[in-house]
Length: 316
Image (cartoon, rainbow, N blue to C red; front, top):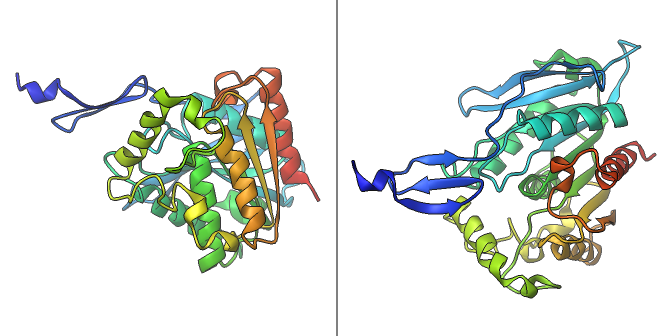
């Protein structure tokens, strides 16, 4: 047997391993839930193809409607997983989207972008932008998906995501603000435990030295052409376009025990100082760690996060 088939080149356990022969073994985030009508939340879901050529797809969610002419706010959601694991079809994401769609009474599009290492960053950003343009193609009621044509209010669009997905959301906000996105009015963005980083240590990061190299190495692994941890894609503080963020409101959720907590607080500080004219707030969950709401969705803190997420969307 060729030893390269068993030698590990990159170990991101317990999530993913890459072997020297190029084989990618995803250990986590591989389970799939089919689209369905969820009896617990009365939310229906279905899967759609956004770009067949680029293998970009999405799961759509819609609450039970009493008025078939009703227009609802639209959430475009980007999942986390370090740019390399998880999908919208993973049980935790399917459950979370059912819950937020029901709680906030919205329509949602949960994007399945291509993942590293087979498709390294910046491909995830390009796929996400393709997805937003696909969503925007429905603004006049003539898009390919009837749920969006009939029920999405394109004057009340929100983008949300967790971890790497929150990073994508931020970057889509910058792109929308600099290039425009005709047809969509992005009212606000929701960043849950955002995956931001930088060379200079901030807050309590230096106290967790054993984790610092892992985060640095992960970014270089998923983005081999990057300039490093001060790349504007991962460090908003180095982005000259930060003041062009294309929305009016931002909420950043952080968790007290999360290595990236201070980056969330720092993001609020950055956007408030860069000339952006919107409003940013931070919501911190005490005693919790990274994406705790996906692992323990019935906990008090997870339910609180869900409620704050929904109220942010429904804020007049």
